[in-house]
Image (cartoon, rainbow, N blue to C red; front, side):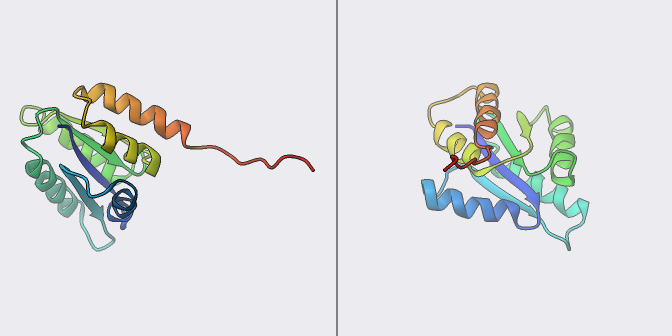
Length: 137
């Protein structure tokens, strides 16, 4: 199974995880890593490393969902994916929304290709963003 790490600013990771649990039940091989105001970048790095270690038996790799491209959780995850490439197969995404996270959590039970799952996540995420325009009366 492909492991999932969700990370982001403030309580983004645990907040969106509570919604995933409500919609799809408690996920397996899934770790939420918040980056709170009182945390240093070293704290974030250590927490991400601990999450990767917790998911070390995920033979399909580890898919990281972060909130903002360029934000510290995204940058730290990306840097670790390079530093730890001999130990883990880590793919990092940004711009996470609930729809993409729920679909990937449910789909990874039958998808073994982390690249295909990552691509699906991006497409699902894009499809979840839209503007409601009421019909003219």
